[in-house]
Amino acid sequence: MQNGYIESFNGRFRDECLNEHWFETLHQARNIIAAWRRDYNEVRPHGSIGRMPPARFAEEHRRHAGDAPRHPTTTSNEIQ
Image 1 (cartoon, helix red, strand yellow):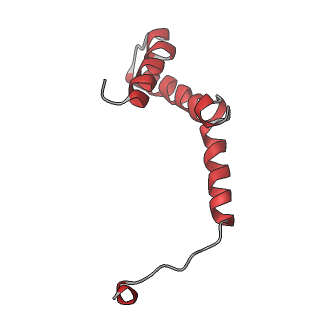
Image 2 (cartoon, helix red, strand yellow; image 1 turned 180 degrees about the vertical axis):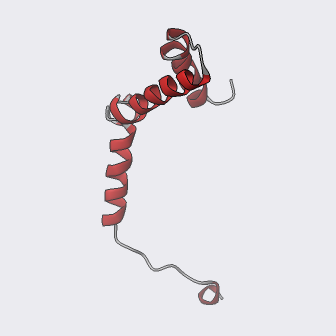
């Protein structure tokens, strides 16, 4: 096992998408996989991020990061 998160995702993708569909064309496979990906990232809640969809979690994170106070950065000249 290389990475638990990747292994978990691969298993879920296989069980919920690939094993459920018989793809007859590449176009059909792309459409079905894209729909599954949208559901996985935008609709379905994930337990590891507070039972919310990843897209909502990312939006809230961006909003909070924008509200965070800005700290001045130091330049290489100031470190000397």
